[in-house]
Length: 596
Image 1 (cartoon, helix red, strand yellow):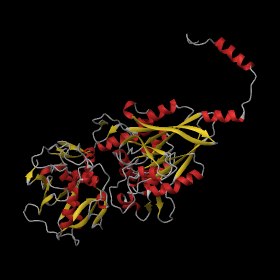
Image 2 (tube, rainbow, N blue to C red; image 1 turned 135 degrees about the vertical axis):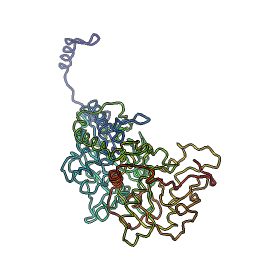
Image 3 (cartoon, helix red, strand yellow; image 1 turned 180 degrees about the vertical axis):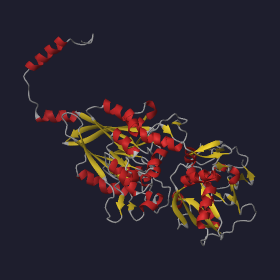
Image 4 (cartoon, rainbow, N blue to C red; image 1 turned 60 degrees about the vertical axis):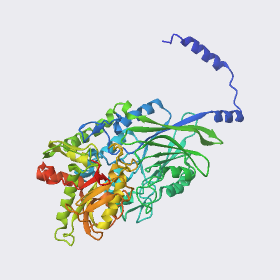
């Protein structure tokens, strides 16, 4: 049957017969070369990053479908639907899918198969391997959170992937050789009448892992500078035939670091594009930002490098499109662009859901176990700017664990202080049953508990550093709790102490805000030479956040996960009553007048 406006089958056949009767004239070499120059082909690269253990569009802390104020969705299942749609649209044309890291940590689902039923013990396939294998990635770069659970679990996860895991700048200390595959060169078909395109993909992981996961990597891995590593490998990839060079990097584009100069830059992606010739595009992650399309001009070649970052948790998919031509027997990119696609526009891929369903259901059952009963509702909503019972709960448990462990040692006589950060603004212990997911929602990171000794002077310096979290607000100026903090300082880099009483004067300049620091319940100032044991998480103690004075030898480190300690304490007591642990000891002031 033909379209009403289209030619009949008879007309088409007649035209074909007439064409067949025309003698063929061979094209001259010049004509053939001209045709090749005028012909273009295309390549699409799809990119994800910072999926952080999200497969289902599910909030395990709320036990409900994920939602936020912008109605974002999350998860590899959503990403898979977008990827499959684009693959279908581009059937017969080259499409590759990459990930820029931070994959196996971040949700109770990921934690369950690292801690409760570790894949290194059970032999089970990690849920993120199950999901990503169904989607069909071409390569993944290792992020810093890949090292959170130790090298054996990382190695097991990599072995379960149906595609390569890359990290060119992670070097085996013993051998001096790359600890993981540095790069791959994928040979892809871009269509009829064209030679294959060789796409080089270089993976760069974050140097900060040397600090953040020091216990897992020290003496085993070193993390070289990402810029220097790119400068080393890009020419090698070109020599080995890469027509196009892409970098998949786990580092932001700001050129800054959250730590000091002892390690290479944490967020060097724009610098890589600017300083290393021969790169066509960079997919990057780590900063959890939305960068749809950014161009950076390379100072040596003048070429513009395309950059894109797809937010976090599977909320966005980066799409990079390249137009290609043949010039003098070589491939040349004539046009490139990028855009972000929102996963809230599609449904979840049923194959991905099926691959992880049993693991998802087991995790849901686990996090819904009741651990205790709370006498009242405890909320973290105000924990950034008020001394709240729910944050005191963390500090109380940490203090108790460290104090008991040091009994009978040379440190037993020292007062024990504790540090905690307001990781979540939405965490709540409801009045009544408190479940594992409620505790996990309060303490969302897989940190372990450590302790060090600080002097009174060092505690003050630490508190001054933490107090930079707040904007400067003059006495009498209006206070908006939504904008009271400096947006450049994340909530997890604001610490509060228990065990001493202190005031933070937010009307004063940064560095001169701790106007009162006294022994608890007294007006006795803390002496500079006083000695304290300080309970702290491993991330902070190892240098995360670049807080002063905290990177030192531990006096306690039994590798106990803080979240599990909170759960164990609640289960042992059966009741969470703020009367047992809430001791208001700090406040925000302006010229001595409390802000709240």
